[in-house]
Image (cartoon, rainbow, N blue to C red; front, side):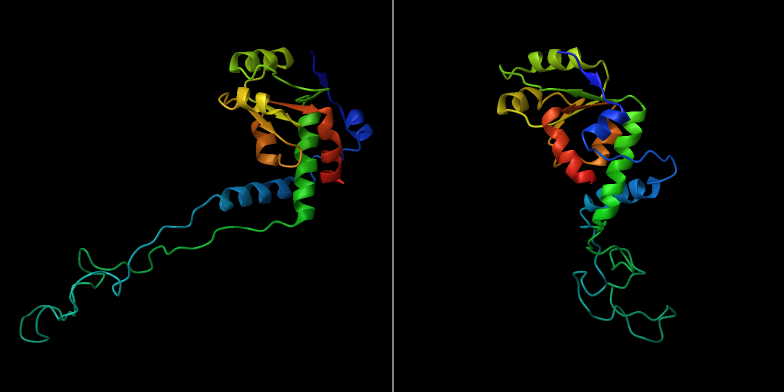
Length: 202
């Protein structure tokens, strides 16, 4: 089984819209990648204020006559073990990106990959025996690239065969994102993914 290099004419024939202008869509790609990274942040970093630190609220020594600066309790930020001023608090880092920007970013990345001759098409991809060795051999028949992304519908046996092969990612056409496309040295599109990708770029 050999893979056919997908060009801009083939993409147009499959109704997959791409951005051919080198200057258009760069900001959309940047915004979407930043959003992906921000959405993965847990936002659970937290420090205690002086009101949350455990300890007595008793004044540590009398106000006057000691020669020392006046202080209240030991939970003040000036003391070791005291509260933290303006420290991190739990927060939500997630960002929302409009659908039009997502669509433009996908068109841009697909177009750049196609122009770089990094996108290939095959009728189907299946590993019937579910073995990792067979999966690696099947991928090598298609491309020698180190990092490969295969987009389409897969059987459970194929998914099981490829789940431990880290340089190769399997993704459905409805779930594939631009981070995966940017990370891959070679993108292999199964013919059953064309219709979904056409709808996502329309």
